[in-house]
Length: 242
Image 1 (cartoon, rainbow, N blue to C red):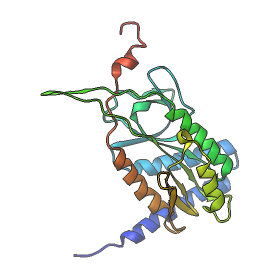
Image 2: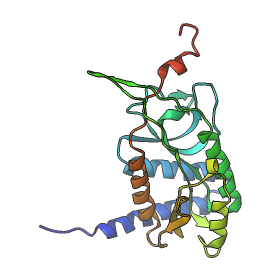
Image 3: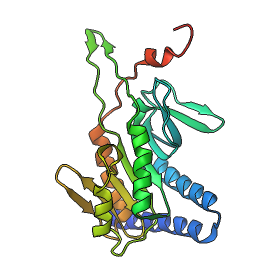
Image 4: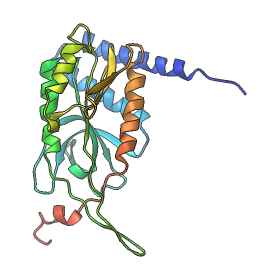
């Protein structure tokens, strides 16, 4: 039986992703187009490597009261158990109950972008998420409680030196509870996972930024389990007939 260098495969994957984002930053001058290009690269990459149970898109998040979030660059959500995802003229509207994780995408990480990402994340976490009992042969399963939506920031580089040092940590801990960033990737510098309960931040080496981010993201998504069942009647109440 032969062997394969898994570590080498991960390193090759990271090199490809970094080169693609770096090329976009170098040659695309218009800020809006540059941003859209980076978002699409992260979306395409996550779609390719996350388990198929997860859908990934740029989207607005809505709740059954008609509230809507800011547009989110990268949304990881459930579509297997979610009864509807609206697509209106290529703009996606996803029920808050279906969302596992949200990410802001920027070319670099700095204090202003951390605060900005936190505000966008807060617009999602402030939405109402319903849950309902699930019928089975012997009766009903009790409504499953929602877990906190995972959040993060995806960038190519850092404006700080050191990239994820004291200034970065101060900016992270300055966010309020609903704005907190849990995980992020600074592709050229390293990735991070914040443990707010123990006031600690796990960080990767520069060489393993993408590997660390991907594996830690998978672990955090596993902890969230499956999205609870949506109370469809709550959404349906917007209709005259229901």
